[in-house]
Figure 1 (cartoon, one colour):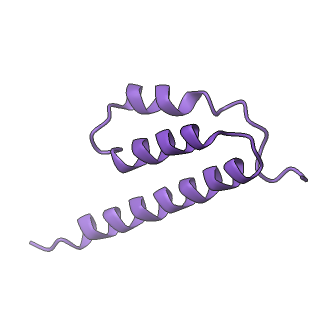
Figure 2 (figure 1 turned 60 degrees about the horizontal axis):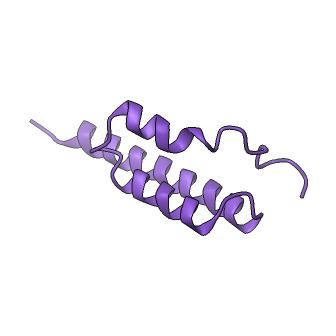
Length: 73
């Protein structure tokens, strides 16, 4: 049995995490989130496999109302 599907899924998950981190770094640079918020996001993403869907949703939900990243600065 090969681990290729599992490896591909892991790699895709890591790419998604990197995109989330980049997006939240941009929000931090724009002053739309605090350093504490950013650290909480990093912790949630690092522990994504350990958190329930509900816990992950709770931790990230407060950022849903932030302006889209592609709006002019």
